[in-house]
Image (cartoon, rainbow, N blue to C red):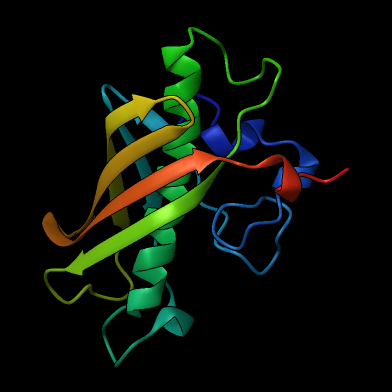
Length: 156
């Protein structure tokens, strides 16, 4: 994709996350983008993301949903405020609630598509629903309540 990912707007102090931090060399480094009214991220698990032979570890699915939805929450809030993601003050979100439903075993070694749909943007809270798709089959769904990062978590 030629557009900039939501996570590409994160400043260095917000780029260490295991799921989406570009500065975490051991992390997943997912990238999320708008695709119409939905957000999308793609990720191909490899052999160390295994649960049992041939299938993805459920914790990876939760991490993908979590980080994709939190990035989507930030992007949706900028959009609701009519601002570009590179404007100040920076909006960063953290997870207040994460719910995952595993619907089918997720195959290892195929590209996963994580799609997010914003359900609510209200004050400092954003609710995003997601689905994880492998080989055109929804393997998991998720719901994330994201809240604006409290000042106590920000680097001084």
